[in-house]
Length: 102
Image 1 (cartoon, rainbow, N blue to C red):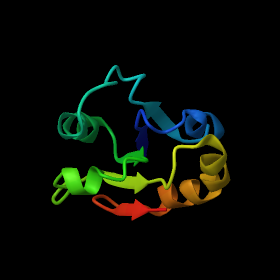
Image 2: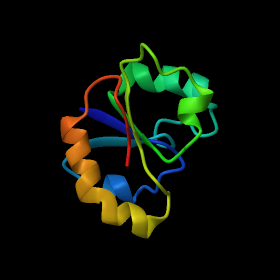
Image 3: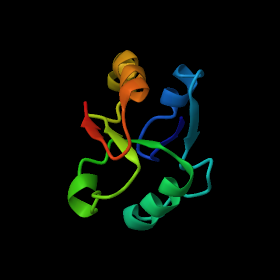
Image 4: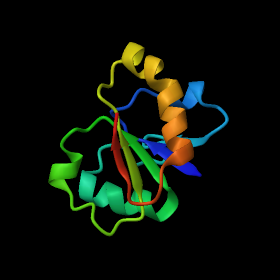
């Protein structure tokens, strides 16, 4: 499963989940691209997006998308580090078009 982490999510997620195929928005050269266009780009190459953008579900129409989204409660490194086991389990179980808020 190919996963991308939004630019607002600490890259520690990628470092601490080395068994997962994770790229960052920055690695893809997509930093600064707005949500609508970014979602289109992401959906072409990834199955799961991890973000901490709480407005995403209200700003974008997510219906009919195959992309699964995991919403983190914070982008603070200690919070995200504590959630890594849960994030990894959600990645294992998440289905296309699911939106899971931790």
